[in-house]
Amino acid sequence: MVRIDGLRDALPWVKTVLPGPKAKAVIERRAAAMPSAIRCAYPVVIRRGEGAMVEDVDGNVFLDWVGGVGVLNVGYSQPDVLAAVREQAGRYFHAMVNIITHEGSVALAEKLNAIVPVREKRRQTMFTNSGAETLENAVKIARSSSGRPNIIVFSGAFHGRTLLTATMTSKKAYYHGMGPLPDGIYRAEFPYLYRAPIGMNEDEAVDYYIGRFNAVFEEASPPEDVAAVVIEPVQGEGGFIPVPQAWIKAVRAICDRHGILIIADEVQTGFGRSGRLFVSDYWEEWGCPPDIIAMAKSIAGGLPLGAVTAGASIYGKVAPGTIGGTFGGNALSCAAALKVLEIMERDKLPERALAIGGKVRAAFTAWQKEIKAIGDVRGIGAMLGIEFVKDAHKTPWPELVTGTVAEAARNGLIIESAGTYGNVIRFLCPLVVTDAQLERGLEILKKSLQYAVERLSCRKEEIQGVIR
Image 1: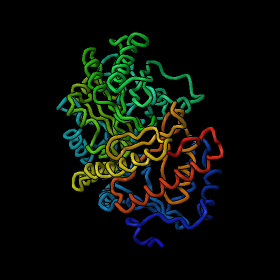
Image 2: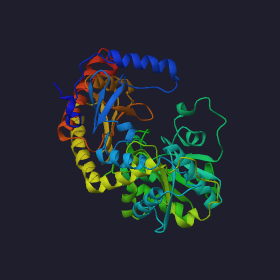
Image 3: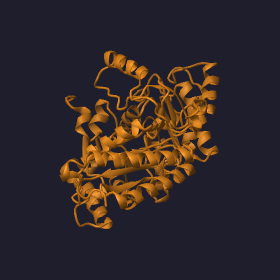
Image 4: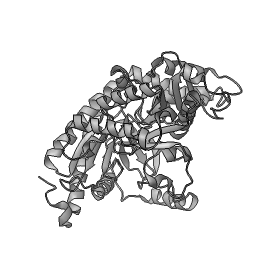
């Protein structure tokens, strides 16, 4: 039996059918009070969370490998973050930065300017409230700075659900019936090496995708009209697909040749997840840093905050009044973010991400030898994905993922699907997970996968040859 008093170090324990009676009542209230278009994937109603663990209103305990979709890298209820927010709340909640300066926003901007690896060394930062708002402003900054209208994005991309960022997002389901959409957004093919044309090795595939990027200048927009290219260093919703080193180096060179800015969308990849504070830290080491970095999610440990860091010369060309907003750089959120950055450094959470990722990748790769349905294991640090396929033709198998996710939840593990075809399971566990919790989560996930395979075994055309 799990001791609930020690939730931070607890192991998963589900004692009711899900949802439990108390959770069921709240979920029914939600269905009546909130739109069904905003879905909830799991039959769980949180009562409290600590570290990587969640207790629901019925006393069930879950290990959370989603972390608010990458928001909780420092975990639920981090004590030092709570203390920083309480201290700030005792002085004031909010002072709009367009009206009154509050020192917390200045201190946070100074900190980010010192550590965010954009190309220009003299940097400035503005604050927003969310990932989508951050990307909106990054695009406005790039257009205003360059005097150019067009933006290049990629297949598989997810940048948000506002009208502009939904247009930038690849998957049509995210903006069904929402047109007309903004103009000036053009799409290139993302370097999805697992699904490169048949017969290509990695070097050939990278050359192919570089060629497809260059084709945009012929097929969609001439380069002199392109303000920026927006890239997720690891695609999130697209299936946890990392950008190859050779590809980003080539794209950086192409953009430099044509005077095009690179915006790195680090909303999900940032703040220790990759083994560095940003994936762009790796890019900088490779000699191809971005010009602008958009960030949000884990920046403030669960409070709403986003930021755009860019070179001062880029910001210097932006007209006053065209960027900003009421709650950007809220005092409580800035206090939390300053403490999050301190904790990241103090507790060496990027290094912890590498240790977690190494253990999880080793497990996933070992399973791949047993289970043919695992087509690919990929990612960076503790941002990992498993892609499931039915056959040697790489036919996506989303039903297997759906069954695995549901079974895992019934056994106390919260995981989430991803991918253009819904056939990827993603790993975004808080970086404060204990070794015991990590081992237990891997055990639950493997058993849940095996269970889902067995449940689908009656469909012979799908299951034949899945288990080696």
